[in-house]
Amino acid sequence: MDSTDVTAASRRAGDHPALETAARVGYAVNGVLHIVIGVIALQLAFGSKGRSADQSGALGSMADNGFGLLLLWVAVVAWLGLGLWQVTEAISGGWQTSDRVKAAAKAVVYFVLSWTAFKFASGKGTSSKSQTTDFTASLMKQPAGQWLVALVGLAVIAVGVYHVVKGWKRKFLQDLETHPGQWIVKAGRVGYIAKGIALAIVGGLFVLAAVRHKPSEARGLDGALHNLLGAPGGAVLLALVALGLVAFGIYCFGRARHADV
Image (cartoon, rainbow, N blue to C red; front, top):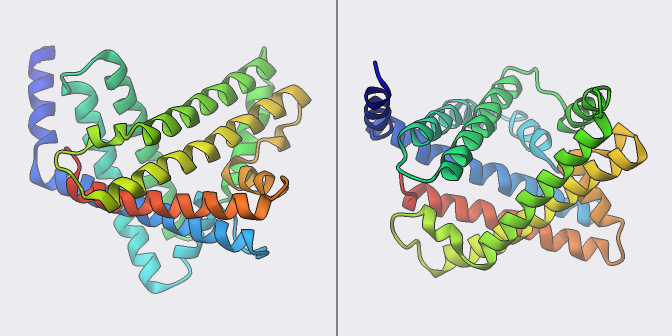
């Protein structure tokens, strides 16, 4: 089978109704995840010391009740389907190389989300914070480890800036095949900017971990939001970012319906 056959087969797979449906459900579940993280972050802003305001905290809270557990199993399948759809886009999408790379990177993200949801659904989930710290510690042990950690941080900051620009300029509308309505557009704009700010802080913590040679400084999203809480006016800033994450979740529901899949 040559490359043309592979591309054609990938395009047929990507256009299959089952995979398209899984991709749309995946976007919707992504919305639930961001809303739960946003609510946890909002509780943190008002003094709650409960779950981590990150992926593990959100998935852990979903696993605590029957409906949430059912949703987790749906997420396992939906995120797996969304990851596979991104693979077909990386192979058969008629875009520039950078777009193919982005699709491949998104596929990895959704495969990891699917696996993580599976771990929590089966009662074996672990803290995102500890995973980030362990990853940073392992990376720092490599040759030029501090530089590698710093590069990871700078890359995450760049992704955060990209999200802010994408939200500000409404470039996320390019991901949709139909206009979702003004409320969804506003939610997407606020959501992308808020998520970008949060990611930029996460990247900054990686850079700080590299400078101080302390893997514990890289604490993921929960650490970033706690750092934001410690800034002047931190409770208000954290509440705004939390509401922005909720807005991003709402946009994801709009994307589930209007996405170009």
